[in-house]
Amino acid sequence: MSENEMTSQADEIASLVLDEFGKLAPKRRPAVRDNGLHEWVPLSGIVVRGPNLFKCVALATGMKCLPASKLTEANGVVIHDWHAEILAIRSFNRFLLDECYRLAQDPNAESDYLYRNQSSSQFHWRPELTLHMYCSEAPCGDASMELTISAQADPTPWEPPTPSSQLLLGRGHFSSLGIVRRKPARGDAPPTTSKSCSDKIALKQCTSLLSSLTPLLISPENVYLTSLILPQSQYSKSGCIRCFGINSEVGRMSCLKGKQWEEDYAAVPFMVETTPKEFEYSKRSVAARSSKQAASNLAVAWTADGRVEEGLIGGVLQGRKAFTLKGASAMSRRSMWILAKEIAQNLGDKRIIEALSAESYEKIKENNLLEGRRRVKEEVRRDALKGWLRNTGDETFGLS
Image 1 (cartoon, one colour):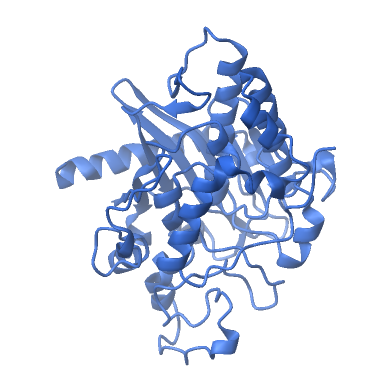
Image 2 (tube, one colour):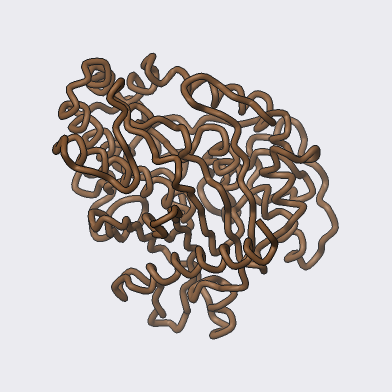
């Protein structure tokens, strides 16, 4: 593909996501507060492209995550990480599960996205379709460290951290590059162990866009990003190569080049492309309109089938009490488990039904049917994303 064709495609993908967001109700957008502060928020979307299909199927806004101290209270109800990129991927997984549910209910139904392999109970992504992701901001973490450095009033590298303090740096110690980081936050914010968007997206090059329980029902084959689209103002070539580069000698993922695993997992690099288009509510766009800005507390999730359009605050549905079942998002662990279980029962696959009938969420993830995915994650974290600490505390809940 020529450079002009890549630019054109990047612009088209960005426009598609921006247009879909523009169709949402005004209540889903950042507001101007009573004190005059203009809110900004990151936006991400997943776009499907094929011979006769070009569609944004999931999008999200958001920029916060759950403190580590609250994980034990989450009970499968509260989303842990609602940064736009991660919430968009979760929304895409919800879109896929809703599509599986529709197909499982009606054997004669057809899908533009999935087909059923008659030799197994798994669904498969149509190989002629490619997947693309647009992000209005550079993903937090390693891919954006050059941008973070350039934004410092004093760009002098900080002293490297001592070994005892090297527990998932956030935005601090920006001279340490190529490392796994946690989500950045204010110095007075409760600590989190949620990994940066850069790290999670890098891992997706090996585990596919499928997450949580979705691989029980859908093969990961072909469910990989072809391109990541960033605004030109948010692109650091050196940062993206270092963070995501599988085919580059200097990329931290380069040790996985050509790697293939069992069960259709593989190391599949994506291209990073840029667009001059800016999101209306990006930090830069809002700053151009007002000198008084603030980060929005509101996150939004949407899918193209009309089944999801949510406002979220604190990882739960807007207006609902935190940590209660009524506050559960459609993308929460609990909601996704309930839907996956219904799909398995409609399919009648005893192995999947048994896996999803486990006494706890943790037991499902330990099931043999997900062993291949576990091996991939373990190898990638050992060899490429070193220092990855698991975000634990919300695994023991059950549906009964």
